[in-house]
Length: 487
Image (cartoon, rainbow, N blue to C red; front, side, top):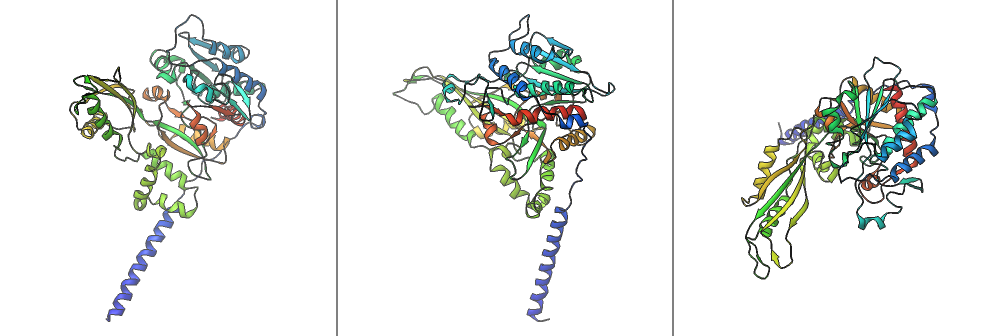
């Protein structure tokens, strides 16, 4: 055989292998999941108009009640003003059974059409994060003004989390106006201290008052929403089935105090600064969770072929996909444990080198991460025995809710019914929510708010100019009413 023929034969083999590879990639990219089937919605519920004047006034008045925490939630023989507002505006006029627990938690019960079905628990909180004095003037409208302007209702708590409380109660009021009940019993659990850890709110409900929950079919909390910014052109109904573990470390160094005119290289601030510099550059190892794999698969089903091929063939393109996820803070937080240096503490005078300095480091660990192993890695990165590391807060690992079975299937079907243009995807939220108390107690728990948000709206939560669009209020009321009717 001539050399030319050998080269042609080799080239033919290469071409055949390449064609086979392309065929495999295309076939795998064509393997799409059967879409969930929508549920039947009672006609009056599918068509009703939201009483927006009432809903916006109720939410505006709710925001005007300053429920900032910290400080902690006081114990008082009468309900806080925020709960009194909800009782007077909704619960008492509708004659709904309710219980005020430990003077600060509200549980409202709404009877369902089928008493044999396990209840749906809708969780929300009425506390909000404070507004710093030096930020007040930067708000377009007063943070506790509850102003409706330019298509939005402005104020602290509008999105996090008073908006969902009002939408849930308004949905119940709308159903009663239609002569309808929820399909299953609904229990609203409204708690006071989510923003400071939830120990005396959701934590107390689970540990001391679990009987008020019944045996829930599902607990639904905040933690994700309808997302427009993750994949351009796709509306994602992101259901958070898990969340990262909240751990806070205190790093401290003790040394010899001295005069600032004669600095020492081994002074405590210098030792800690060098250690923190190394820690700031550290990136934990990548770990792609099964939930993230499911997220990518479901997104891929709705992308054009050219974009679908790499996502459906991660066995070949995993490196490129992971690099892309790691290039942005949000996606990066879904594939690795993260840490942030949040507080520095030390020194009393500008010409005195302090004997002791401290720093606070907040970590968010993926479900299943081994805290001891993470701490060993941090010690190795710091590489300084004078730095003492203490775990000051650990809210524990939270199990991930399965994305198979009756609860997921029915919830997914409910969402595609309510939001037919959305792609329902599971995810693990980098944030921390009260949902962890329920999930850690083996109570089925999802995290989802029926509001459409983008990067801009999310950046306002806990920030300046928090707001909720009037359209989102309308959408939230309708979504909760439909959800209660079909879930």
